[in-house]
Length: 235
Length: 125
Image (cartoon, rainbow over all chains, first blue to last red; front, side, top):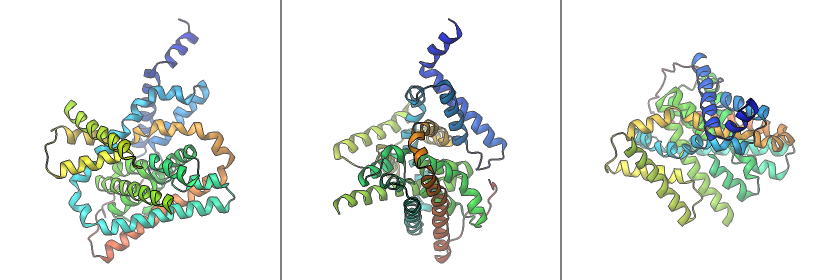
């Protein structure tokens, strides 16, 4: 087998892209740890950039890459359910705070949707585009459903959701340090509302309390958004 | 570990069945999460390795988003046409939303005289 043949053979194997995904993440994670856990050194962004460059250079279609990466992607479902465990362990703490949490959640969510739509619309984005921007802070399956309902492009929304998550995970710590908000509960909750699962992953990296509040906020935001979206249609 | 994994996946499967039968707009893992939470909360039996499995899955939650992040390459064409309004919308509204949520919660917690948690911020990332 010569080199070209070997590449063609390997590129068709799910093993190749699964392993390369893990290697890229390990590199991203190592960079994150070496930086002293700095938020700007985001493992998802680094791994994504490495892998996207490899795909562009080797001219590999995303569908072929996903044949291997799907095994990692699949674990998102079980990992979401696994959030029930820390939620259960911290339930007494959450229950006491449910009122301020819900208020902060609604404020964060309204600011997210309102400011994003206002900016995209006033800068002349076409209707389909600014409507796709609206649900960007919610976890992607719900965001895509909302985009479809209100007349946006679900696929564009899926990409914007990921970008928002990475952006939120990167800005949350420096921003809230600047605002002198040190409370792990406030920090976790705000990033869970604004940046869904990727923000929640960042919160768990820093503190388990922040992680739990981020997870709770993300789930409640998903449920409330789905509920509001289902009402929108009947109006 | 197989017992705990079976336990988790069963909740996801039940979630999937409920979502398709009842035509819900909520993704099946969220339904699974709620059901598993209720199960544990009611004190029903769970596999001993459930805690370690859940903690293991969540420790590297970031990894699980990598394939979706790579998927951004498939939106490059669509994004490149409108990147200025879209990028500015995300770049401004995301920190604004984080600031609004965190500020609201802290203000309410102070008003309700709840003691803060986490003045011991170690990592300043």
